Image (cartoon, rainbow, N blue to C red; front, side, top):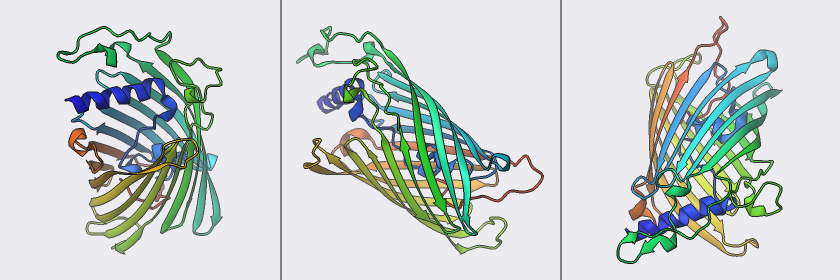
Length: 347
């Protein structure tokens, strides 16, 4: 119990008052949530696609994190690109201490570089609202050594418990029939989003840090009955690598998918490198999680489940992380049947 209290207090202080040190939510089914990974993924399915995502992180620890997204995207030939809409919600801490909601829209312009090589360039704009539930916070001066949290805190409540910000992101994606790569930059405007520092201040700790993402992967058919459609028993593999950097946090994700249609199994290994000061001369290597994933797809839907097995020092406290995804693939409005533009993992 004491360890859980310490974790809770540390996390809440980091989120509420030093938000430049906080990270964006991490997902484990990267390609089941494509618009969150990279706005340039908008339209890569060609036909309309709906995606829903839910993640419950560290359910065994006090003050769990629950994150959910919903998105829609489609490619339009008339505008030479894809359009997408992404809704994001995050509830952090016991009683919802920090609640974040974001709505954004994106456009991904498709460029044909060669016969078998295409690129997409994307811009994303959105509005984010973050609220602080002051009554749900706990502080050190509230703790009685014998009875626990029994005192009133002397900490001063911020003047504003809600903050809305305008945010932007950009992305790029390149792909061939068997290989793809991309990069994205989120929060490129670095908006002010702290509760203790007002907008217009030069305090860097009040700004939302840029999140950089780079990803690369391949997709190979080992057995395929038809080039035009996927059939039961088709087999493919897809190795992948994703790198994420935000503030002093660096995460490396190596993964592998095996598809035996309509089933998919996958494994990922997530580990990190954290800088302890601004000079980046003190580095700490962190083992984070081993991820196992299972998915099933059939014609118009895809359902995935993944579990993060925590392998860091918090393994006995967190209870891992659960993640569920649902994708609904709608038919194209045109009479012609459109083929998927990009071959990449579905989960």
